[in-house]
Amino acid sequence: MNRNLIANVVVGENNKIQGFVENLRNKRAMAFLVIRDHTGRIQVTIEKEKHPELAAIVDQLTVESVVTCVGPIVENSYVKLGGKEMLPEEMEILSIAEPLPISKDAAIDSRLDYRWVDLRSDRNTLIFKAQTELVAAMRGYLLDKGFMEIHTPKLIGAASESGSDVFELKYFDRKAYLSQSPQFYKQMAMASGFDRIFEVGPVFRAEKSFTNKHATEFTGFDLEMSYITSFRDVMDIEAELLQAALKNVKEKYGEQIKELFGLEVIVPALPFPEMKLADVYKELEERYGYTCPEEEKNDLTTEAEHLCAKLSMDKFGHEFLFVTDYGPEKRAFYHMRDENGMPLGYDLIWRGTEITTGAQREHRYERLRAQADEKGLGEDVKFYMDFFRYGCPPHGGFGLGVDRLTMLLLGIPIKEVMFLFRGPNRVSP
Image (cartoon, rainbow, N blue to C red; front, top):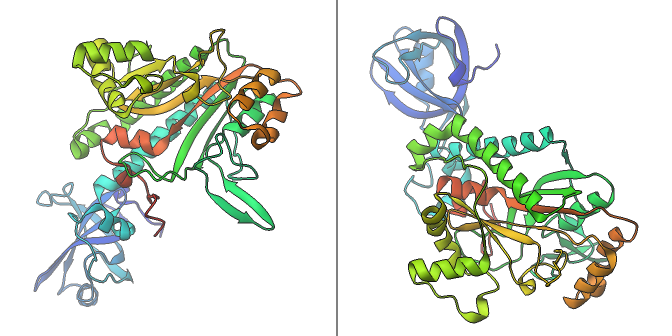
C-alpha cells in the first residue's frame, strides 16, 4: 500500500500513514497517539483489548519516535484534529527517539546545534514552505518572460569583484576561491547572446559580520537582461517580479503567516517609489531629525536604511523604496556611469533593509577597462574583461538574497530563516 500524506487521508478507506509521534497517551484500556508529518497531524486510537499486538508496540514508543500505521480513517466529532481519527490494524516502529536534547524555548544557538530537531514545528516548516513558494513564483514569472536558468561555477580562479571578502582554498596545485556572486558569469551570458538569464544558487562572503541579516553562505537569486535602454528597465522587472512572488505567497500562505508570525503579507502596488540618495538624506533630516555624517553621504548608512521603512510608508504608503544616485566610490567598477560620473544603478529597500543592488552594466570594453584600472583591479579581472572584447549588448541586472527576503517576509533573524546557518562562528552541523 502506498503512503498517504496526513493532509490527504481518505475517510472510509484504509490508509497508510508514516510520521513522528508528537503526543502519546497510553491508558490502561486505550492508547491515543498524535502522528505528524510535514502536511499535518492525525489522531491514532487503539483499543488495547481488541489489538493486544498493537498495545505491545505502543508500550515501546517514545515521543518523536517514527512509525507506520495502516488502518481505516473514521469520522469522530469528539476528536479535535479535524474530527477524524485512524483506527489502526497494523503498526510498525521505524525509529525509537531518545529524550530530546533541546526544548522549544531554548536559545537560538543551542537550537542550531540540533537544527534537525529544532525544525520539527509548524512554524519552522512554514518558513520553508513560504520560501519554496517565493522562489517558485519568481522562477515561474521569469520563465514566462522568456528567461533561461543557468548555473554558474562557484569555484573560480580569481577573486571576484573587489578581491576582498572571499574564501580562498587549495585547488590541486594552485589557489582558487569561492564565488562571491555569479556577476561576472551572468555578464558572460550576455556576451554569449543569451539575452535573459537568471540563477538560483549559493553565494559566499568572507565577512565577519555579526548581525541579524548577514551570513557567510546564502542562496542568491540573480538576474541579467540585455538590450535595456536604462537601469530603470531593471527596476521595473524587479518590482513586477516581487509583486508576483508576494501575491502567490499571500494567496497560499498569507493566513498561516499571519497566525504563526503575526505579520501581514502585503502585495506591493506598482510602480515602486523612487528617491535620489541626497533627497533621502534631506527628508530624513527634515522629518525625523537624522543627520548623516558628511563623509558617508555617498552611501546609505545602516541607520538611514532602517529609517527608509518609515520614510517610504509616511511619504508613499509603500513598503518598498528604490534609492538611486550613489557615489561612484561606493559602486562596483562595472556599473555604467552617466556623463557626470554618476553610477546608473540603485538599491532596493524593503522594510528597512537593503535587498538588492542593481544597475545597468558598462558593456563598452575601453570604458570598462578604465573603470577597472581606476579601482586598481587590473590583472585580477583580466578574464572578465575578455568577455567584452568581441561585442556585447547593453545589459543590466540585480541580485536578491533568498534568505534575506524570507527573513523580512516573516520578521525573524537570518539564523532562524536558513535551513542551516553559516556565519563567522558556525560551520556545523
